[in-house]
Structures are given as structure tokens and as C-alpha cells.
Length: 115
Length: 112
Image (cartoon, rainbow over all chains, first blue to last red; front, side, top):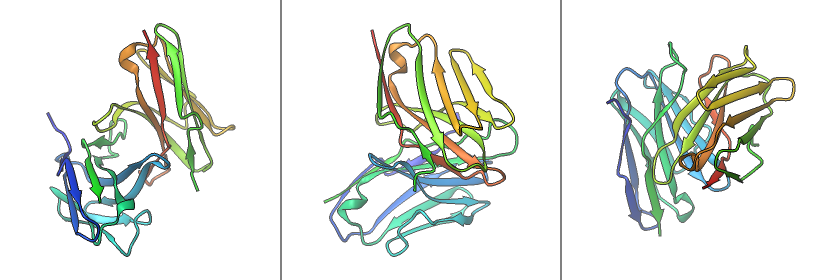
């Protein structure tokens, strides 16, 4: 059963610490997304990649956030330094527009709490 | 600037009745739309999609309607069941981009 895998599921850290979230997309999907769920913004797009190349990261605060795909099986989202306002649930999703409904498949999320 | 808006944060419906969830968008270049359901502590799961070349798509109890001139889409759930209680998100992408912008979500509660 193919699924998007995210780690860690939960992370509590102190302000100023570095946080790295990881995502393993579904094999064969060529597009990977990072979203952040907040009460006010809903699911906010932070960045997305196609064939490992970043296409748009305009949703990310550039001074502290970075997103990369070191290889086709791993996407990372890093926050350095973290701040309390970064507390949210971060979702990774993957998909492929070729064929099918073009839907995105989401992981279960990484819940980040910055104290 | 919220390009995809779900103006009703919450909705309560009696079991067996119709649930109608609404979504408005501002970008006329959006050509593909998705609806997702999200339970607490889980990732969103896909429900149904619609392309801008259609005005209606059905899948079982779920029907999505698209009104391009009004830049409005709606999700109808008939009949509503208690298990449908969740947060529903609509999403839109611009032609050729596969970049999905999501709305803020509507929390649906189906009362038994």
C-alpha cells in the first residue's frame, strides 16, 4: 500500500533550535509539496518540487526555512532558527499529473511545537 | 491574498440530509479543482475532482459542481452520514502548473 511517509510525527523544541522534517514520497511520483496547516490560512503551500527541482518556494520565510530533495526518495524541510510562530502541522504530499485524477497524496503530518 | 476561499468555517447537518460545502476562487486561470477530507491527526485524503471543462462530477454520495462564471464550486454530500464529520478543503491549480492552492477549510459536523 503506497503512502507518503513523514518523520517525525511530533516534535517539541525550544526557540532557536534547528528542526528538520523528512518526507518519503510515493515511488514514481515526480512532484512533491510541503504544506503547513494553520487555523487562519488553512493548508498553506510552502514549496514544491518537480523531478527534484524546486519550482516554487515563495510561500516560505526564506531567512529561516529551506527545502531540498537530496534524491527522489527524500524531501526535507528545515527551519533554523525555529520560532514559536512556526508551531503548526507540516504536511508533505506527492503526486504525478500524468494520468489519473491528478490528486495529491498526503502524509500524516509532522506536528511541530516550538516553545 | 487568499486565492481560494471557504467562507464558512463550520457547518452542522442532520444525518440523512444534504451537506453543501462552498468554495470561491479569484484566479480565472485555475482549471482543475479537488476536494479533500481531513480527520484529526491524519493527513487530508482525496475525495473528488473536477476539470474546468465540466460543470459537474459525481462519485457515489459526493457531487462537485463548478460555476466558472461565478468562480464558485460546491461539494454536495447526499445523504450525509456521521462518518462524514471532518474538515473539508477545496484546492485549485492553474493550467499546466500542478501547483495546488488550498482553501481554509470547512468543519462539517453530521448530527446523528
